Image (cartoon, rainbow, N blue to C red; front, side):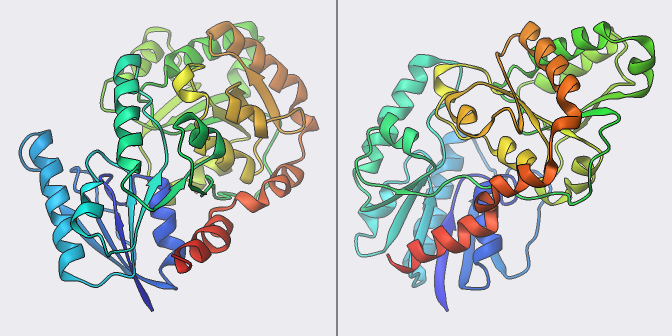
Amino acid sequence: MKKLLIATKEQFGYHVDSYKYAEYLKDDFQITYVCLYQKRKKIPMEGIKLIYVPRIGNKVNRYLNLLKTIHQEIKNNHYDVVFVVYFLGCFIFQLLHPRQVLNLDIRTASVGKNIRLNFIEDVILKFECLFFKNISIIGENLRRLLNIKRAHILPLGGECFTEKPANMDILSLLYVGTLENRNLINFVKGFHHFFEDLNMETKNQSLKLIIVGDSPHGELIEIKDYIKRYRLEKVIETPGFIPNNQLTGFFEQSNVGVSYIPLTKYYQNQPPTKTFEYLLSGLPVIATATIENQKIVNASNGVLIGDDSDSVRKGLHEILEKKYTYNPESIKKDLNQSLWKNIVLKNLKPYLEGL
């Protein structure tokens, strides 16, 4: 069995893509996974050797400790492939281990609110790519945006979280994902306006929004404050972050997925995990009209909207009017090739075996 090292700064279980790589490759590879310990609950996985780098000192020291740990792991063990999910400074591994088979995996460009900083970070990313012979990337649009000439396309996937037919008599919306830099408060405000438009019977019996996610910058607090201020506790729930392997119950009680991403330049070419997960679970979506969402959302599986609160309100009215026309089985079938199991076993596995 070949030995595979997956190296990333994200704690195991909190970055869906690399977590799914490990989950579906563990029967074919002997996997070691090195990551930063970010003081979050550890999520174990049988068959994976997990190495946590302690969160000690300032950000620079933590990065240096991560680099040192990965370097020592490569130096002291014979790995057939080292798979690095991009983080700043990872090009050093190719310099220190020129004979080691390494792959750089790029899941995103810089997507912060500071456009100048995004530009600088993307320039650094492109510079680091020059050192790697093998590169995988999430999509063709991102490859062109970063001007990377040679890369293997390793697309985004999703899971089917429920096989149960949804109860369409109510409108139960689900948002799953990070709240960081997502401006989800705009969606909450649009939902509030939509709620006010409805008659009293619908308000009391047939409407719910569940927001599953958190961020380090106070976005969840802002949303909770808004809910409290306008007494929306009966229709909006905020359970916070829930691990990917514990989401089934939330999907089972929902019938519409919310894929709200700000319509900014830096999100346009970013394939949305949440859109895939909703559709693969048979849920129609209300989604902002990013370039990537426009590729997969159509009249048969959802509604595309702008990112302002009025567009949200109008989109929710459209979803409400069309809710009985959606066919969950057809929605699932159209994206079956995007299940994580298929992405990993039919794309990533043969790619790694060929390096």
